[in-house]
Length: 122
Image (cartoon, rainbow, N blue to C red):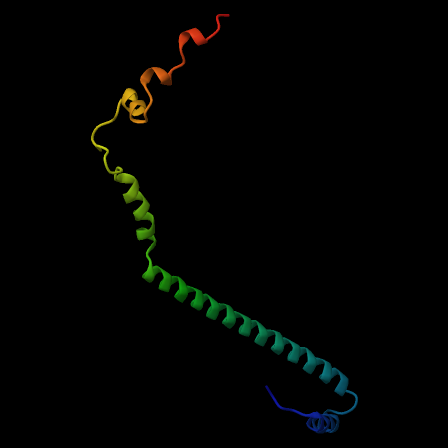
């Protein structure tokens, strides 16, 4: 910020000692230190807020870029379209009966149910 070296600080201290006087110099130095600390904290707070705003703007730009490249609606609509269309070879308007579904799998209707004689009488 300021490029003040050691000798510049010595000159400022001597001038302050001559102008203010030795009795009031400690009190003035303490007050100046408090004000300098407040100024630094305020400056740091402003810098932090600017950084957060810039980061938020960057994040908004990234999200907008992603939204333009691949909209969320298209991502969500694709599986729904695939789920709505039946697989090839199946009539979409007709619901198969239970006998047809098991016969389609290569099983007979009687094989799907256990025989009554296999169940022990109790």
